[in-house]
Amino acid sequence: MLFTLISALAIGIYIISFLPIKDFRPYSIGTDILKEIDRSEREDPDIYEMKWIYRVDGKDKVFSTEQEPWNIEGAEFVDRKRILIKKGYESPIKNFYLLSKEDKDLTSELLQRENLILITSYEPFEIEGETQKELIKWRDDFIKQGVEIYFLLPISTMGKASNSYTLDNLELYMDDTTLKTIIRANPGVILLNKGVIIGKWSLRDIKKAYDLTLKQ
Image (cartoon, rainbow, N blue to C red; front, side, top):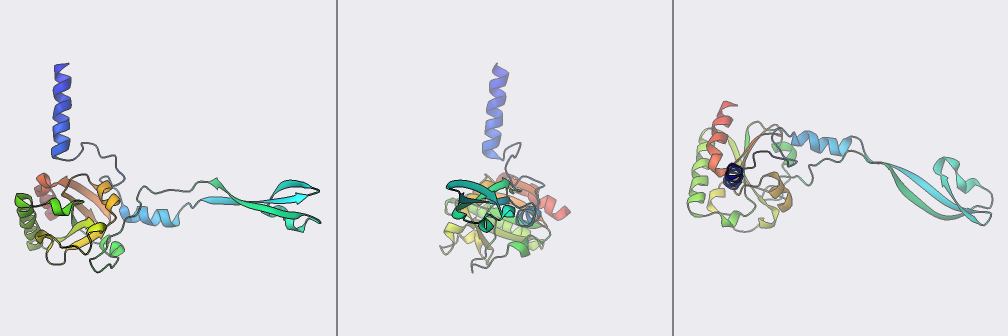
């Protein structure tokens, strides 16, 4: 009993300090964001069938389009209904976009890049003090190694004063809810390679992101 309690507490502390041991979110490691976006737009759409209601001989009857009820002599149109026959593929990747501070959509362009680092924050104005200094240090370290890095912020903060750690036009913006869904840590670190999520870390583990990026 005591061992179980201690284990539960240890796991809880780990999750608070780092990231969940098992990520059940749509944006788990290995997810191909570009492929999911393309699939949801092109593959397996919803299938609908039109049903027509015509009054024939004083009674309302339901017909398919193939039956062409409008050609029935004396038939009177009553209504038509679009009925879902088969639900198509619905991607868990929803409302994903990457906007520059000039409101330019860079999603497709950036998801083609190799070794792209995104520093995420859904509460950017709460980041200050030592955390801010650490972000500046790592930002500079990534840039010195030629790694492309951006700070991904909630769209609701666009146009507001940026924190000093997001200098050099490195800000990107996305939907607030989507940003929180991608990673729980604030700030968080994501490594993308051609749209595939290679790794996700809290700021405590940013060195792991740095080391892995240089090995890629």
